Amino acid sequence: MATSNNLNQRRILLGITGSVAAYKSAELARELIRLGADVRVVMTESATAFITPLTFQALSGHAVHTTLLDEEAERGMGHIELAKWADLILVAPASANFIARLNQGLADDLLTTLCLATDSPIAIAPAMNQAMWRDQSTQENIHALSNKNFHLLGPASGDQACGDTGPGRMLEAPDIIQSLYPLFNSGALQNVNITITAGPTQEAIDPVRYLSNHSSGKMGYALAKACVDAGANVTLISGPTSLTAPDRVNCIHVLSALEMLDASLTQATNSHIFIACAAVADYRPVTAASQKIKKDSDSLTLNLVKNPDIISEVTSSQPSLFAVGFAAETENLLKNAEKKLARKNLDVIVANDVSQSHCGFGVDINEVALLTKDSKHSLPASPKTAVAEWIIEHLAPIYHSWKTNKTHG
Ligand code: C5P
Image (tube, rainbow, N blue to C red; front, side, top):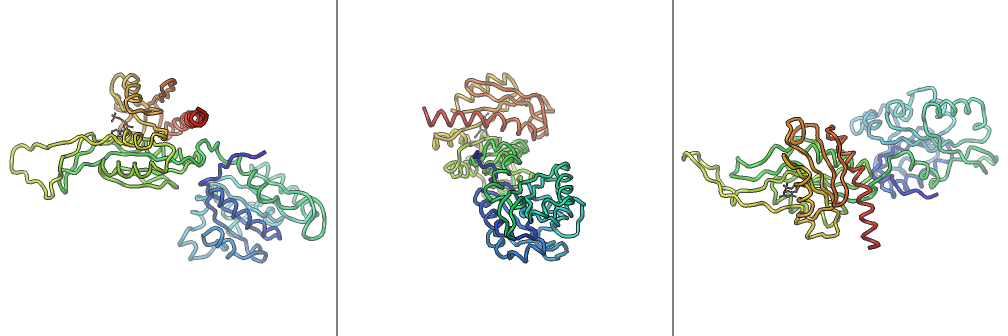
């Protein structure tokens, strides 16, 4: 049964060990990359006798790692970093020798060391002669690895390169890929292009001063991560914050509301969902003084002009976008959020109560309700990372049924 691709943006460390089936791994690497996975290859020494690292370097676009104590490789992505980088280690083909070493917990080469050092799942696709597969030691090792939650993919049965017939053939690349889908999350927003605005904006008064607000950007950044984890392609348009963009997110840094508008209009042309999480400054100085304003007089009047409403501009320029806004309110939370949903012509609004000091702006906790014009879900105060995951869990089905209605409506 075909399963929808949830490999987009996944980081797969493909381990190749010494087996004639290594030639099939070239097709496997190619197909994983075609499905959007980021693939890095590690080969054992004996694997290089069957197929060259250059083949995988050309296919993956990255240097192939072959040795544990390679100073140059350690200066790039060292072995611990590589183990942490991977969302999954897939060893295909996995030889009888490798399987035995893996079960022993040995760390006598780069690949076994990575398998010990990773917290991510490990899948193995055995490939060996049918007698070696049937051998009691191999069977004990396989049994033990299954009990330790390693994912066993295959082997298949049939004609073997050595002329024998029986179990031990490595699965074909499409079958390995089918077996990987269940190892990842739901892929609730697989391949969906999402643009998110986050953080405050800074509106220049003069070269050294600006108007801004207390937004930390934490909610928008957590949403970006939750979207990537659900398989989306994410662009984060961020005002100035002290945060580091989550991995795999394309981050565009801006300062002012006008810069954020510009970047949003550009990104929206290529997006399916637009999430406006930024706390855009409502007003900006009509002109920013070109020189630092002197404090000669006792008072200073700033002439302010209203900033454009970014999400409204985006939805009017791209009416086919699914638009999600936030409403930070201190009173009449739901009523005000409903009004904003209608006024800004949004599909979803996330209402958050910022009346309590432990919730909302600048802190790690948020309490939200997610509203559409005909549904409402609420979440009690929770860490922003959990809030982000909760929002995406609820948003994804709303988006998909909106899309289906739009197509058939
Ligand atoms: O009107 P209010 O600022 O409460 O609306 C909040 C929502 O509108 C948020 O989603 C925010 O990111 C978005 N917004 C915007 N551009 C503005 C002001 C708010 O996109 N200038």
